[in-house]
Every structure is written in C-alpha cells, then in structure tokens.
Image (cartoon, rainbow, N blue to C red):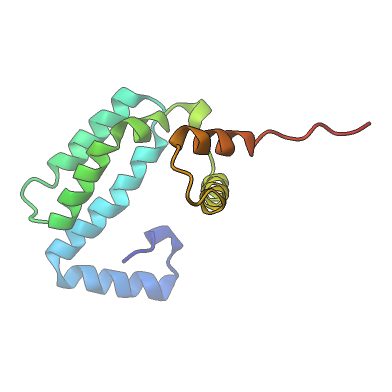
Length: 134
C-alpha cells in the first residue's frame, strides 16, 4: 500500500490488485495517494493550485478523515510547498536531510542559548566555506 505501483514486482502488484478489489474505500484511498504525487511535477503555481483543489474535491464524499487532515496540513504549508514549483527551487531530499542534520547538531551544541537570532547566525555561518590556501 505504501509503495508506488511502479515499484512493485509482479507478486506485489497481484497482492495489491486483490487487496484493492476487496475494499472500495481502500481502493479510492490508494488512488488518491498515487495521484497526489503529480503535485510535485508542476512548474506553475497556478496549475499546481488547480490540481490540489481538484484533488481535494475528490475527498468531499469519501469519508477519509486521514486524507482530510493531510489536506489541511498541505493548506497550512502551501506557501512553502508552492515555492517548490519554481524550477530554481527544486532541491534534492538528500541535500535537505543533510541540512536538517547539520542544523540539529548546531542546536545541540547551542543548548541553553535562548537567542533565536544568534542560532540563525550560527546556522548560516556554518555553511560559509573556508578559503583554500594557495
């Protein structure tokens, strides 16, 4: 259920097909999950919003509370999500994981420091590269 259909082997696809035949709500939930991934392919914020609104409309009569909660989270973070639509802003998840880990290390080292601005400066300066000696 959590894997994309394209990542499943023959046996996995057969099991998924059997599972989805047995439960219509589960089938609809799976289709919604799979279709949501299209959001990340948009390069235009307007079209991305139209897609998301259409996706949310599909939830209307489904009684899928977890998906409704998910849609609310997406709404709250829409500005950050939509910034990903700009081709210049697409960043690999590996880079973001590394960045988040580095920030966590700085936060641990800065334990007891209450000044948010100081912490932000520490994070920013940690990414300044040392000049190479000649």
